[in-house]
Image 1 (cartoon, helix red, strand yellow):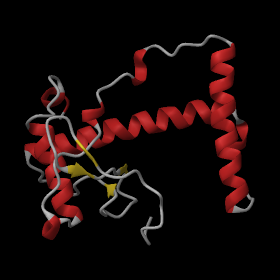
Image 2 (image 1 turned 90 degrees about the horizontal axis):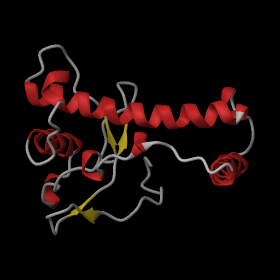
Image 3 (image 1 turned 135 degrees about the horizontal axis):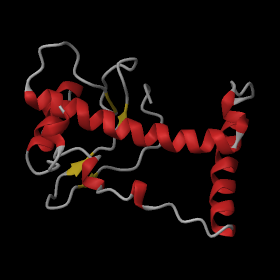
Length: 159
């Protein structure tokens, strides 16, 4: 990802927009802010928009952590370091995902709508023009979006 070698999906326009929008990963304070990794605003004196952004980012991270927890509890290989080559580790992860889906289909398991959330909750808003693609600008666009078109009815009660 650092060298832009990761095959990320091509940017897609959000609903109601014709401007392509990049995909990003959600991160916490341990990650550096970059074009493809969003991390929370730091510090204690955050304004409301920054607090809402941090809440929304944290909410997205919880979904990822929950999904990984499900996989780790089903496939114990994720409870310890996977000490194999990168290619083999990738194959192990893909196999676990396929097996998870196979078992769910076989057992007619239907996850209740835990993960049935609006895609707009996790995608960025329209990016700045080409000269303004700095990570801080992208994060600021997320923050603005979460307070405008992408607002959730309960988010202000959570910050």
